[in-house]
Image 1: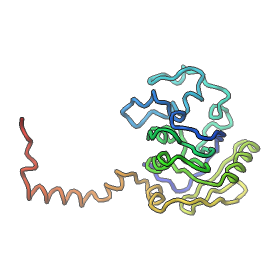
Image 2: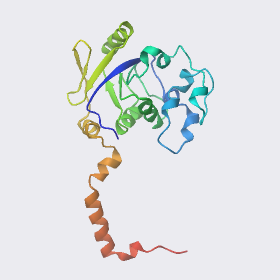
Image 3: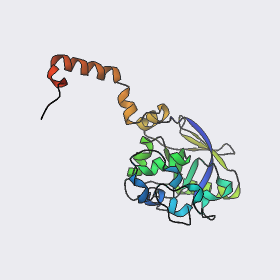
Image 4: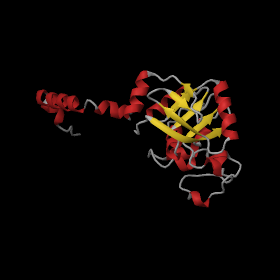
Length: 216
């Protein structure tokens, strides 16, 4: 998992409440057994005018020119500004995969669905909670200033605006530790690789029959 410390990025505004995970990555793209390749279908039904299906060449699609992520001023955005209850709906982990693989490193919203919120941290995506008033002010500023960027300092737990103003945010200490160090659940386990190998070797020495393959 990519670690997250300090990130400065262009902000894209998703001015909709209750954006669900089927909008983030539609159900037909969940058939893949890989964890890669989902970014090209992020917000597929909103980004394109034609129906999407797995295996399409993105170059053959018809983009929706009115959708925010297709507008030239938001190309390359890596911070998504959203409204309340972002990521509601089904529990698919593919949603944070798609956001991350599209290029987003952080989301800022007043609230999130619990499962999406947890899945984001486990996949290196930082969901930041700010008040509705703060988020509305950011929407106004993004609209007023093309090329609007924010800096997210996870160590200090602040979002820094272009004028230097800082917006503090809360993050649970363990989640912060994992993001700062780029540790997902597997990475956390592998910190104890030596102890695991020692345990397995000792157990095998004491119970060698465990190494035998059962027949029949």
